[in-house]
Image 1 (tube, one colour):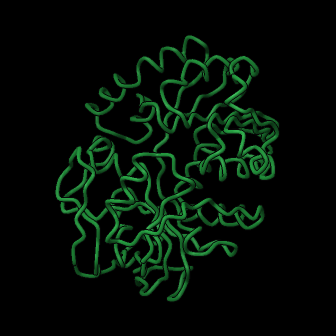
Image 2 (cartoon, helix red, strand yellow):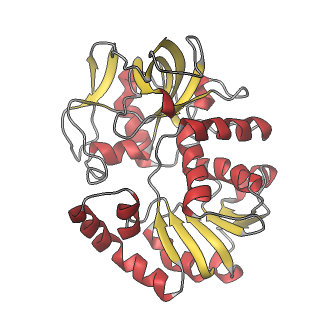
Image 3 (cartoon, rainbow, N blue to C red):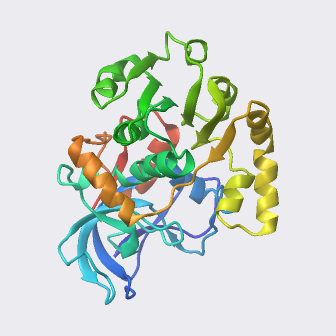
Length: 333
């Protein structure tokens, strides 16, 4: 089978397409014939070795973190799935490999494909869906009636996070570009701020939670609007000591992450706010819950219209690296 692989970490974004054997499956795994794989900024972080302190890989490494496909074989201990089922998955971080014609995946990391999505749109759902679900439920522990603000929430993350937050009974405020206002309100946002004409830090205060999708440059502005006792969750800024402890990393890694996140922890503590960082994990049970939210709210993630095959993997990666894409970039098999 064809697979997109790297042989070492490199600052140059380039990948080999190799012929490798179809993987064997374990008792708790399924063999999936891959239909579509999504390309994420996470791929660049893996290629460059930027996340090797969180997860270090052996080489050659088949890349790719999320996919849709059809089950072709079932391990002896797998329950709840059968051959022929259409599935979607954020692969376990320790065993990625979506950029291949087949993938052996732990059954605990897959969910049935939402009925209103096809293989293309479905491939854009698992990673952002799980990030939103885990962020709201586990990291923020948000409660009905509270308020969450998502700066830059008009993109693919917001598409999933807003309906999940509304299903939890939260008030949702989003900032984004003017073109996305209408569709963002349609999927449940209670208030929409146009970042080209409105500064959210001048308009908002006493917010329970902020989910940062923009990175370090926005940290001080985001912190300024959160009430005492609130939480700031970042998808992009920096891991910190709490992140390392929650993931059970060894002492030396905890010290490194504590050092990396120290300035953000200090600023947050001074304001009486808790700073958290999320790195999403696979979870099939949560994918089944997200499936229902997607179906109930008729969510269809945006997908970039550029057509890519496995042979075009370098072009797809470079498109994502450059940004300014109109939805999730996908590879079709």
